[in-house]
Amino acid sequence: MRAVALFSCVSAIEAFRSRHKAKESGWTTISDKTHGACAENMQHMKQDPVGFPLMCSGDASNVKILATASGSMNAKMWVKVDGEEMGERAWPVFGGTRIMETTVSSLSKGVHIVHYRSRGNIKFDKLEIVGGGSSCSLEVAPNFARDLSSYTLNGFDVLNRLFGENTSFDSFKKQQLSFASDTMGTTDDGSINSNTVAEGFWKWLYMYSQNSAPQDPWGKKPLDLWDEAKEYPPSNISLGFMPRHAGENMQVYEACNTLSNLAFHEAAIWMSCKGWPFDREEIASLVSAFNGLAAGSSFLHACACDTGGRADTFTMDWLMLQSYQSLVKQVVENAGDRLSTTERDAILYFGHNIGAATDVAKDMTRLMEGKYDHAYWNETMRSFDIPAYELPIAGVISFVLWGLQGKFPVPGLASLLENIINGLISLFGVNDADFIVNVYMPAMRKALSFSNICYEAVSPVLDHTLSFIVTFFEALIFQGKVVPVPEWIRSAVRFLDQLGFTSDRRNVMHPTWDYYNGKNCRLRSDHATWHEKAAQGLLHFLEVAEQYRINANC
Image (cartoon, rainbow, N blue to C red):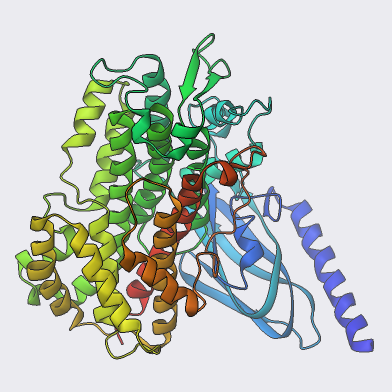
């Protein structure tokens, strides 16, 4: 009992000192359950590290980083600032709350990453950063007040009224999305800007609802949508909550399927706080693509038109290509000039004339920085020679199959993955199937021969790959489309279910957004579940990419 009392006393003294230091400093910013973009991520640090984006308006000085956490049984926590190891702290066997203090003499203007990882039983309660000079923030982006009137954030208030409840969308969630997009979704030079991309796609949706192209009218083909459009009448909502749209209304053909796409915005926030080892352009492209997909897929389900359909598939193609290229980047670099140009291009671009997905992000940022022009935007979006998203899906499963040859701990698992690859190939057109079998796979196997996945990475790679597969395959079964699901997909899901793999087995994201403003959309539309599951599956995909970036050189 004396030991416990002593630990409590020391903890109280540390907390007092920290509060006193905060009062003396020029600025303070915090992240906890109700503050900061990473408020939800930090509640789950037992499973995953957290990388807190910190935005400084100028040069900050005498910065103190105070992490309050409770732990026990010799738990330990480590901290890095902008990739540099800054120390560690252990917790006593009998437990207690401690403050881990890190000092940084100065931070330059721009975005910095404060990264924590832990071992053992740690509960992260609060991150407080104090300092002098120019202020830094874990919470609010500089343009947040302006962005509240944007098509993106203000549009949430419009969509939140789809089922009649006269309430605006959660302001804290808006703040988190704005901050994640301004920090991790935007490069220092602004060549990739996630806010610009999201705003462009959402603006396109709302503007097109009022003035659609004659050859592709709003509501052109609702019967080509999912069961929701067949079983329920369209919803009508007022756009009067947005500037410049007083007196205007919008028809939404699939309300639940539109709202469920907000899961991709929430996924953009979660991935912004993961601290993944991708470079700034890759991260910004991923955040932009997630935000673009949220709006692009909403476009399809709201309009039942071809323009929305391509906005949906294009953003998915972009997101999958970026995720896939982030997966294979280190393996291709390890192979170097031992790969021919043809082999390298086959691995990276699947035979398409597309280049780096980060360049797609830059092109989309430039496009949507300009004045809204449906014809020009539509023509530009359709001009990209980008591989359909099914190709990167086949690519990542092939990579895992060949990269982990001989390391499968479960009988029948290698055969399952081979059957899945063959099943996916059978869905492709003749040209794509021939390319995958005779060009892509030989090049991929050659590249992997110069890399070796580390032993400690085998389990997380398998775990996230199988979670990715089952999430997407369950989603295909759930989505309720008329096209029947092939038996090999159902067999794969049954096999993985026997191993204990279901899409809810290990979520990367722990959702807190109320996409539907209280409406039970899962009861109304199976396809709404598809969007939620797809957001989780895409994050699993990126967890696999992380392992190949940091553990491919053993």
